[in-house]
Image 1 (tube, rainbow, N blue to C red):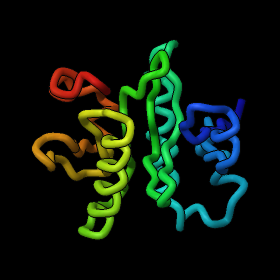
Image 2: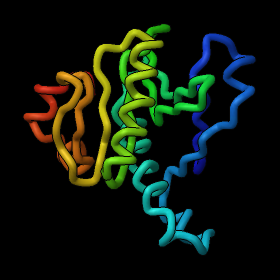
Image 3: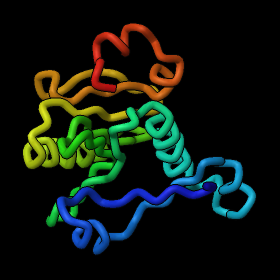
Length: 157
């Protein structure tokens, strides 16, 4: 199991199979060994690291997927538990105004469609809240060290 495939979220298998799968590696060193564009894809490596974090921390009853709207908006990770979407997570290594607008817009669209009240954007070093606390920015390092403040304030992670 060197490679994991993440399917698009859908109520039917047919819908889930019509979209491309996202590929993540269990060992990011493999990617560096087989590609020459390693230095140009730090954002992809960062997203892979978040995937590994989520994979290791989800409940046995939870399933990871990604969400895509008919208009092309995408949310990097969706956690589904017993048929209900419980978490929506975006990943953005760097946050500038264009990236912030794009990631928040996709997250808000998914939240509305799927009935999720809060979403999270995992970043390299940016932290904060927006849209009245509906969207929370958390640096990846705080998740990785399992900072107690993050665990209690954002129990849904």
